[in-house]
Length: 200
Image (tube, rainbow, N blue to C red; front, side, top):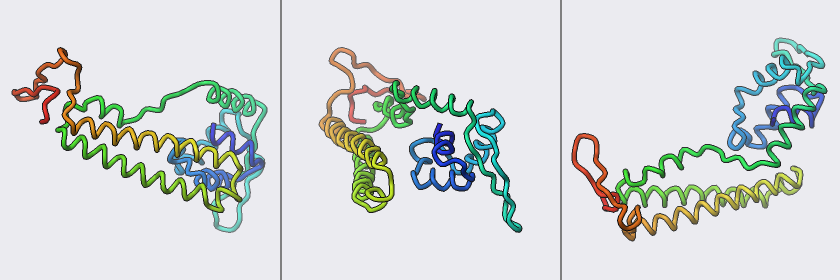
């Protein structure tokens, strides 16, 4: 959707300009658009009839520069994809969630330290986003709604940062990971066991 939408917005546009714009948005970090895959995606969208080639320019020994625009089929596809994302809530897979589900496998001291480290990393990101929001780049060179997206990311990061600190406090306090009466011995590979509420 990102590449199709950008071509639609900037058309007629070179693939190089699409790549540059996506990187200026840091789309590789939040939209899973990898810089090395952009030209391939443009060719694939063209093969599928969603884009068409307007021209191909060759200047000296430089690589040919292809100019694209959206087809009527591409317009329909973009509208469908756009509204699907606006009217739904989609949870992105988060490797940390999978790791956190095995919290009892981590020593308490290490788990708490890892959460505090995660909070610190998020705090650094929050500070960076705040600086971006106050920058000339966001205030005067980007559409207003780009700043609104930064506010969304800022709110999410701050919420997770505070959550990490709260859970680290609970882990350090010795709170059992299971309700009373549900504790059981968790058998470790190779023999031996540990209760999920233990500190080791």
